[in-house]
Image 1 (tube, one colour):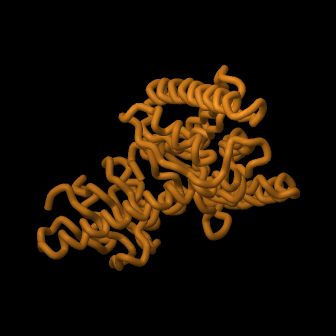
Image 2 (cartoon, rainbow, N blue to C red):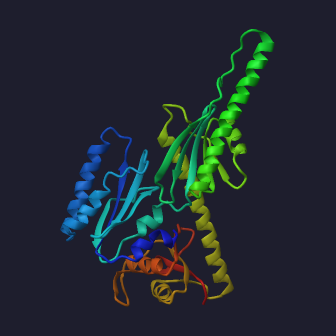
Image 3 (tube, one colour):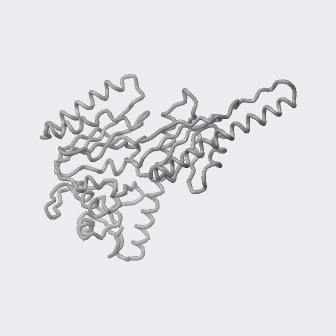
Length: 344
């Protein structure tokens, strides 16, 4: 995860409320379950000593939807002064977490949060496209529909072969015109929103034609599931996009693991593990990437910071511009902490 995304956290003083929970929107009893969960989290924080002001901050963002459809998670980190994080999690944390401390608890966010660039979702068909910009935190921040003026877009076999051929040509030209207008607007929106990645959804002919009309400066990813039609499942589309982001996450794990192991093999001193060694390197600003597997929570001290290692180390990492990457079982790190250094 890019440290810049957590900059507000690193520049804020506690106490911090760190809340992680499942946010499900596609069940009949979703609202009732959500209200019960929210009251439980508020009570947990009150028992830990959270002020009414801090809990009120959380209530400010309680009903933020962020385009969630189906099963997902939420991560909220706040102080009495402000809500610092209100993000979607690709997967909910294993259990609901509501904790108060002088340092934020960020491990579930690092493990399950969106870690991607902003991108444009285009649901296309013969008539145009629905366009949606999703930011790096997984939130839908802008949307519009583009319907071309080409009509008709369906072939009719009437009046003999000659008339059918003319009708077919007219329909194909109208479809091309509609998709061209949608692609032009998508390209313009991508420039406006500084987006380089476009996820295209729809039936195969429309999405292939639409993709070919986009400028070569944009990267295009096809999603086979989902469509623009009424009644199509938004949960299915969300699942496909999560799979896309998960693929990117696994590639990042692969690349960071390869870097770490390669430096170990070179005996360069640029890859280290263990709480004490990693903390020392963080304090000196030498860490380029902090790697986490199953991080230890024993208490550590760094200057005026005293607290569990799984709070102190990520907090220092944010302040030094360090990348934070959760790694699965492909790496074994002492105490669950490793680091790739900028210099020995």
